[in-house]
Amino acid sequence: MWTMEKLGRPGGVIRFLFVYGTLHPKLAPPCVAHAVKHLRRVGNASAPGILYDLGPYPGAVFNGGATAARIRGGVFRLPKSLSIAAQVLRDLDAYEAIDTSAPAGALFVRKPITVALRNGTPLECWAYEYNRDCDGSRVIHGGRFERAARAWSAARRRSI
Image (cartoon, rainbow, N blue to C red; front, side):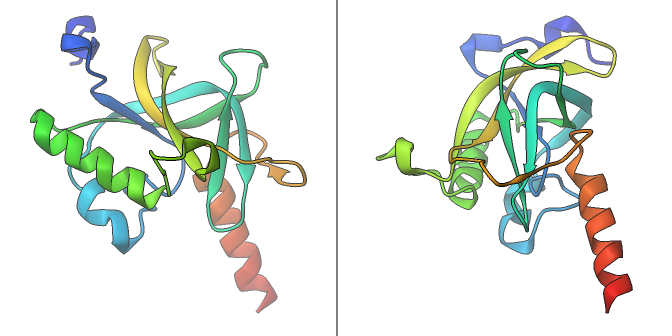
């Protein structure tokens, strides 16, 4: 059982990652599977924001509660070893096309957000936020990419 002490931010280090799309172990492509395998599931969670369908992957825009919309995903614990956790984050940053030398031009940015676990407990996590204009992108209503991806895949199979 996860206690508040275990869910805290020991030493000022964020130990959790909120995933809502292709970083989820069920959806991770082979090029990032080596990093994702180090993550340990904590549970389902949601964060305030809007999830967009960007084609092969989603993009989240977190808004800190400015709207009632929620992005639904999972929380995963980073490895206990700080050096392994740092390597996992570097690998995920590379996959998400984060450019630390020019973050304004990066496709995604990694930022700390507060999510609500299924039982309502708040938890600070890292999350990847889409860093481009979403005008013209379809909103994923309900905020769950996995379900949207399955529906899209099923519709595509029916049209073949």
